[in-house]
Length: 377
Ligand code: NDP
Image (spheres, protein in one colour):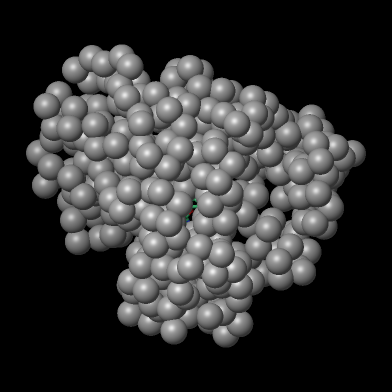
């Protein structure tokens, strides 16, 4: 019988992976990256917010969305489609809702403001919903739901993204990997933090395998013919040149494993983030390099509007324990709740340092030397 698969880059094989990695102290990594942004004209407070989002991704083991992305943001600021000075504004507002025009500011900075506003509204009316248009890539969806958790609220965060995902039965990428995060507080157990792309994997994970020269498992992505491919470099290249091909929605190829449901989830994210806010949708997201027009959705919900907070948290604990003590599949020793593994990684990486791919370190050093920022010793 084939073994049940754990994903090597975030699970059991992490130790082996880290052996080839360079370990960097969280504070020193943040200091370096913040200085890079400051040299580009980003105010220190906004540089801090942006780097906080990127480094949280690395701390949670999401290396595809961590500081490895710094060069892309640097290029965005240099090319002018990411504005270093935050200029977002609320264009429409009710007691419970707001629409923000991001005015092409850094996605992380606008998004933090968006979730802060949703939380403020939820404190007054029990629920706050904020949509954002005309923004840039916002990093990991989970950063913003963790903000709601800090206030004992349920958080929801979604964003649309550049078209990389092929609809069921199609062969061209039309939708983004459009992630969803939902977080809910517990008491003694870890909170529930679901943070996932609606595709089988985000593009960053194809890039990670490409950097390491490894093949993709079947059912991750299709080539120009619309059929499954194991070659990340071929798929990335075809997508970059708009020759066709792309990543498959959750559930994979065709209807057999319910690819159509993942396709529906990706479309749902575009409805909430793109259509509702008036941002670009589908093929148009990021289509115009000068104006990516990414859309986001944020919601904060106060559980106390429904029942006492303590009761809610205790029932979250009970549910998590019910899952975790339930019988394990053959060969498995643990059942996890979403977010649990990332919290464990965070604690370890904060203590032991953050493991970075040597190629990522090289890229960061290069940016540092161009901008006169010293890589930590
Ligand atoms: P993963 O597949 O690694 O994880 C998805 C979720 O499943 C996480 O909440 C994870 O929790 C949980 N999980 C993993 N293994 C188990 C298990 N055995 N039992 C229970 N839960 C489990 O994430 P993705 O690759 O889909 O996404 C990675 C990141 O990329 C996300 O942060 C997402 O927001 C981001 N992203 C951003 C985009 C953008 O345009 N801005 C686009 C696409 C993705 P845990 O964290 O504890 O492992």
